[in-house]
Length: 102
Image (tube, rainbow, N blue to C red; front, top):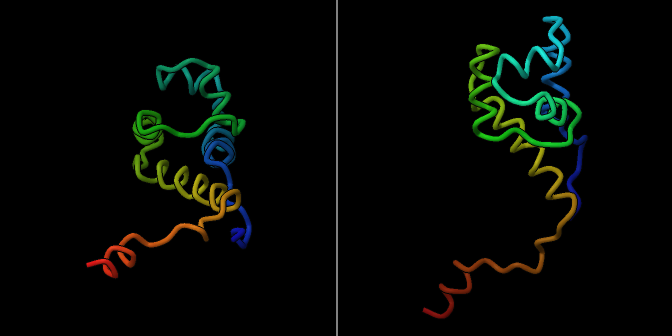
């Protein structure tokens, strides 16, 4: 079944539009502050990589948010796209199958 509704925004885009741009921070400055490579932040901001638990902790500290905020955004993004790509209709519930054999 294809996921309905609008796709969630990549967390990197939210990082760029809601944090970097309003604070007038560029990718290089953020990378230096976070203690990561500029390429890492660039890939994140441009939607080419996701937010890891470690990055979520760094972003939470840098922007006075929670790591859960960043991880939840990434999780929602990943789940939406995964559910739009795969079909699980053929997968049976093991609880139901096991209950019938018991």
